[in-house]
Amino acid sequence: MPIELHGAGLVDHGGENRTKPGPRKYGCQLTLDPNTVNRELSLSEGNRMATNTLGREKPYPDHPERFGSVAQVVSRESVCERCYWEVEYSVSEGCGRVSVAVTYKGISRKGEESDCKFGENKNSWSLRCSKHRYSVWHNKNRTPIPATTISPYHRAGASGVGRGVHVYRVGVCVDRPAGTLSFYSVSDSDTLTLLHTFHTHFTENTPVCAGFRVYGSSVSLCHLE
Image 1 (tube, rainbow, N blue to C red):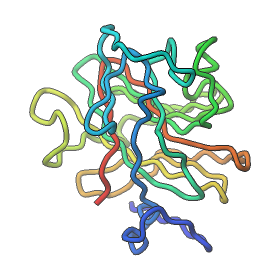
Image 2 (image 1 turned 90 degrees about the vertical axis):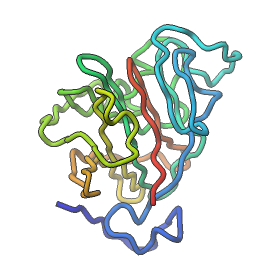
Image 3 (image 1 turned 45 degrees about the vertical axis):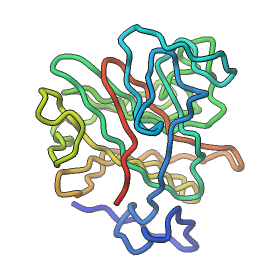
């Protein structure tokens, strides 16, 4: 069923979205930061899509914000008071997995993998997706999500449709004043189904951004209509 969030004194990211129902009223447009992308990921579509290169490292220059050993990337823009975005990812038969994450921008980029990996530390929250298995993670704590709650996305224009690739779409909503972070499944009819809500206290004046971890697949930030 459609989900709706309520609040006063809202900070919206797009005036044209204010009359939309539910979390989509907080819709924002994000891009991926090329200074943070791991060398096993390739950016395209105006820095909105990340594709795993299957071990073929890209010759990106050294940068202190670049992820070293983990195939991850974060958004250039920080998430403000309330923000909603949608993500489309594709996985092939038997392989590919994606983590759709929200993270403090200061998450570690080098060193121990658990300090860097989305969902395995106190600085990030993650929805991990493969073809038949889903779970949410925070600080190494895992909560499984029934696979039946997420269905393939078949709408025209979805990348990979018709080529033996399974395409899915999920929504992410951050409400910093309320201390909530929610993941949704998006259906072909654009209905949002709540998958999980984290309740947390976001550190004040600390930038939060979107993030992806990509293995054997691709993921993209969607243009919200």
